[in-house]
Length: 284
Image 1 (cartoon, rainbow, N blue to C red):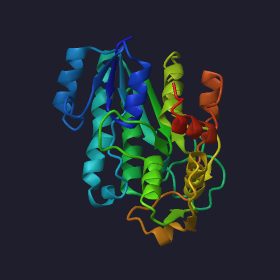
Image 2: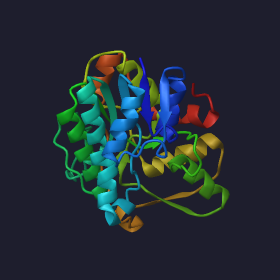
Image 3: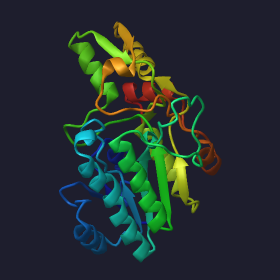
Image 4: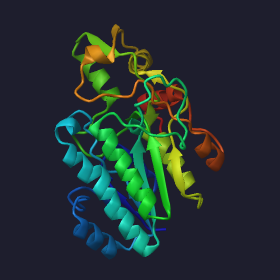
C-alpha cells in the first residue's frame, strides 16, 4: 500500500504519518496546493498512490465568515479534485469532515448518526459539507470521516489547539471565561489515527463518525485539562452569546460512532482517558 498523505505537518497529519512511517509519502501545502486542480493531478500522477488521505483543511472557523470563498476552495473544491483523481485511478480516498456540518437543529440533545440530515450554520460548516458531498458523489472508494474537537501534536510550528491555548492562558495568569453551552466530544488525533488505520484494513467504504467516547462542554474540557495538570484555575462559565464569536457554532454536535465501532470492533477511548494520555505524553 502506498499512501499519499496531504496536510502531513498538521496535528492529524502528524499522527497519521507516525502510524504509516514506511508506507506514506508526506505532502504539505508547499508540495501540493489543493486549490490547484492541475497541480493535484500532476503531483499525484507522479507518485501513483493507491490511497490518498486528505488531512488538510481551512479550519479558521471565524475567519471563514469573512473569507467564505477561501474556505470553499480548500474544503470543497480541493477534495473534489482529489476525488476526481482517485476515481480515475481506482484509488481510495480518505477525507475528514466536521461536526460543524450540523447545528441547525437548536433543540438537539442526542448524538447525530451518519444518516441524520445535516444543517450547517457557518461558512466553515457549509464548506465542509460541500467537500464531503463532492467526495461521496465522485469517488466510489471513499472513507469520509466526520470528527470533532481535535487536538494533538503538530510537526510544524504555528499550529495550536484548545488544550495548548488553555495551558498558555493559565501560565499568563489570565482569568478564564469559557463557553459552557456547546456540547461536543474532545478528540485526540492519536485516537482518530488509530481508528483510521483499522478502518483502512477493510473495504467498508462510506461515511463515518469518529470521535473519542462521551461528551463535554468546552468549560468541562478546560477544567479537566487543569485538573490533570495540577493547575489551580477558576474557569467562569459563559454562553456562546457572551463569547460573541463571529461564526455560530452548534449548541450540540455530539456524534454517534456506533457504525465505526461495529466495523473496527471497539469504540475509541473515553475522551477523559485520551486527554490524560495526551498530557502525559503516553500516546503511541
